[in-house]
Image (cartoon, rainbow, N blue to C red; front, top):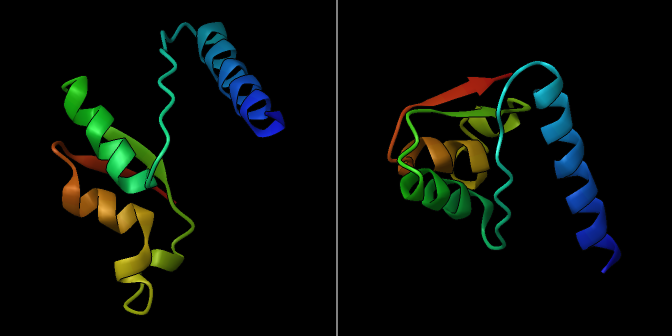
Length: 84
């Protein structure tokens, strides 16, 4: 239960941060394999673009198949913008 509360608080903080900058943001919370959840939500909401961060480690040859970022790039129903 503590983890769920921490996640909810983090998401609410992000939404408030965006709102303070004049950006409307909805909170969509999902459980499951991150890459599949991200792509499923993008498909559900007909997203035009997925923007996500990356540490860069998964985009090397050694980490390619295990990277959430790489999986999203390969599975996404829309373009993906990666911010290192």
